[in-house]
Length: 277
Image 1 (cartoon, rainbow, N blue to C red):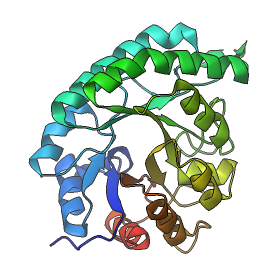
Image 2: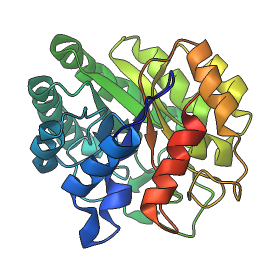
Image 3: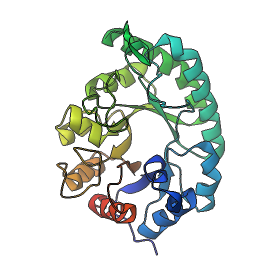
Image 4: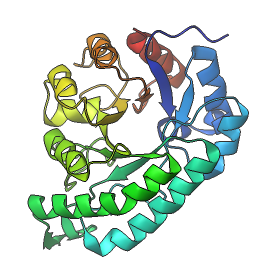
């Protein structure tokens, strides 16, 4: 029996728990979500959407359709614009058909060849200009289909694990990403404000939520440091952050995107309770 949630709607990020072995199939993740009170499973591959929808759960945000590490080849690099725009456009259409409201987007890595740090760097200003151009190219279609693109800020400081930090990612400053979104000037282009990444790179999370409230389109969480559970062993105080989100009128989902270090079910219960304000 799902527990009644507070004012914050909560979502489970699929990839974090799909890594937890055979007992954590998509069906299992959906069953856990219903048991605890989560209303959504997000960032699941399109093949998993029928299973999620079968369980009566929402899909808060979708991946952009890029293969592999989708955050590497992004809109900051014109060499990747054709592929990123084509795959994102296709994903927008799939989301509109399935009732998925948002699609993730990325600046990409700052290297001219995203996989080669020796290939030279795209300057921050140039990267921002290319992101604006790419997002503007997508914005009209997103507006037509009623789907929102959410450009994510990621940290570049943690180099201990490929999903705990992303050295080389261009959009590692929260104000840099927020200003790209503002320059696009579309209600269908917003920012994915990841509390964990913001804490690692910028800190001052509650103030930054207020400063970015005009462009926040989605929220992610994880414990810091280490991207683990939202427990007493990490430094972020999540309840007042959730209350700040309610104060600014945020009515979207908060996606739990922590990498489990112990029993995933207990971690998800704890995270739900911590954010259930």
